[in-house]
Image (tube, rainbow, N blue to C red; front, side, top):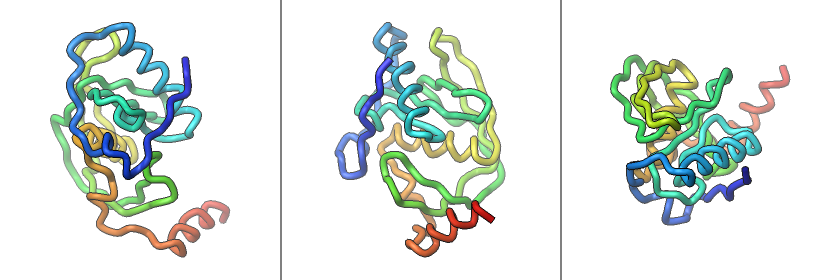
Amino acid sequence: MALLNIVKEGEPILRKVCRPVTEITPRILQLLDDMAETLDDANGAGLAAPQVGILRRIVLVDTGDEVLELINPEIIAAEGEQQEVEGCLSVPDVWGITDRPMKVTVKAMNRHGEEFTVTGEGLVARCFCHELDHLDGHLFTDKAIHILDPEEVAELFDGDDD
């Protein structure tokens, strides 16, 4: 496995639409493994292939219990609403409030080419939406209803110590 370089905002690849995966090849399996190592090293909640310079419809989401590998994911159901803080490994040191569904169901393929569905709530639902947005060239800042100023960010992280 290898750590991959995380592409930062301003790089054109982050604004492109990704191509579907048509075949699970050794290269795709290596990408999944490398993305998992990169996500773990960056201590992120999710990672999409374009964030590591690959225009394929692949995302990883850390649910807290496991890291889900989602190939060609699509949201098939969403309900509720939440307005919470989001950040992004490709947009370092920027935090914003987004309006996302509270519960999201995604259909995808696993590394064996088998289709499955998974439902997430709260943070996992936000991660599903956030990472799938990357596959269509959208960043969370495009959808943010409020970008936090430095004082709000300081309050957000200082509040963790109370």
